[in-house]
Image 1 (spheres, one colour):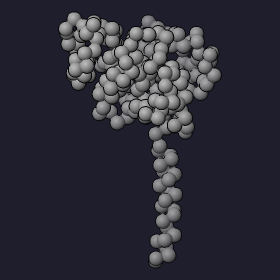
Image 2 (spheres, rainbow, N blue to C red):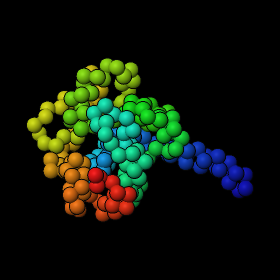
Image 3 (cartoon, one colour):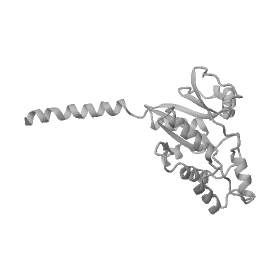
Image 4 (cartoon, rainbow, N blue to C red):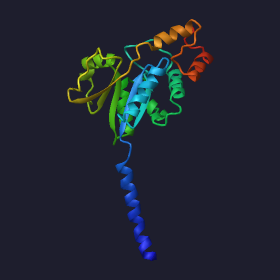
Length: 214
């Protein structure tokens, strides 16, 4: 009997290993944005993507460099606010210090390359709004790596999104979030108001650090 038990151990180990590989979380999302500040619409987008099993886990990454919104709060403040907003969601991931140092002041493509480097076996989906997708269709050719799919967030049905773009699979979600914007929230805070579209703890952080008051 002792020999039988000993011979079973390697088999159990192999079964455990292959079961882990079979059920591993392999769909990874990357959601970049200015998040200045992060608000309920950002949270709704992440929640919807996860609830619909479009990805298993998702990186939420504030842009350190973007040509579309040059005047932003510091990357540290925006990263801290993002971490506060998604603190209780175990499926939301953040860049490690090592990853952040590798990316430095890179754009979305640099973020994706670095995340892929540390997650080589996972399939990647980039999350972007319909407005960013319109820009992407124009400048995408400058980025050589097309080995990822797209998740497009639409704020209504007025924008038509194809099911694929030059071989890249596109999935889309539609959320009615027209009344929510970071610009509107910043203006309300500057005017001494407390925006209803922002997390209480994020708002407390903003006040404690005197953000958006000028």
